[in-house]
Length: 343
Image (cartoon, rainbow, N blue to C red; front, side):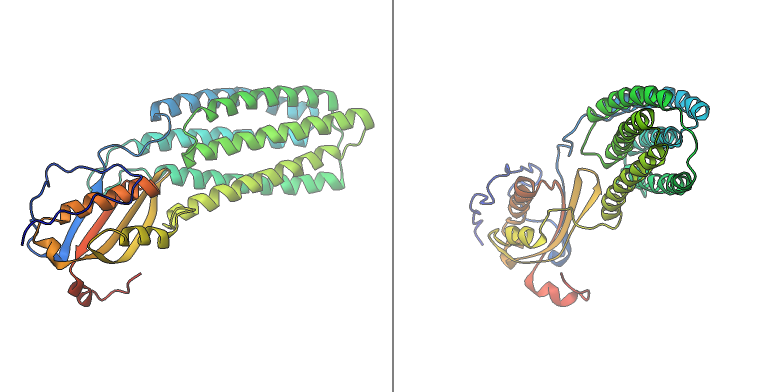
């Protein structure tokens, strides 16, 4: 059969990928029913700053938080402020969260080897999940003590608490600024940033409580401020656990419509059907896709398979920002040999 040229890709916005090693040669697979073709585009899927920069920014934030936490614990014990002590406990979890994030970044940078076909990239997602769990645990402890002090409020030195809270606001602004310069698309970095931002809001609440105590003598303002911190912790924890859970359970990336993806792939000339379509996220900013694609039988004999691969990859990159894709091209009759349910 003559080598009929495919029309130019019409999925449009993505650049056409080239595969010089495939060229116009016929597919070399002995069994066309089981042809697997994988795309791992030559350029890496990175839209943020480098891992080395992330490590630098997280280390700066860690140093600021550790230095202030030590000072805050001492001040909280002297002043008798639960709000300060709860903030100090939360800042300690901030420091632990950033330390875990730094460790996860180093693990994620390890190359794929042996059974670890994606390397250790999921370490960053596990780090984000751990950060969410620690926020839940700390919030529960602080909530119990806050309720106890609402019932029987101790005396709080408002002036000292106000000074420490204002310094804490400055320290957390510095730490947050450092973290915002890291890769914000990383769920791991987001986990550390949420810890720091929650602490920043907590210090603001503590400063307000201290001002109220100084102006009115209303001692219950301190545990009320602690409960505000608890609510912020719970909100941040829910976001981290939800996002990390979606990735660990291999749910399709948020906002990615599988029907739309299938429709785009079906629009490719010579494609008869697309089934067993799966989209998941390996780690932050790294979606992956696999699918079985039924094509015209003639494509296996006239050299069209490499061109189809180029066009479908170009469509995914251009429309959905998916650079890691795996396709199994099949003849129409091959579906009778598959026993699993198709999706």
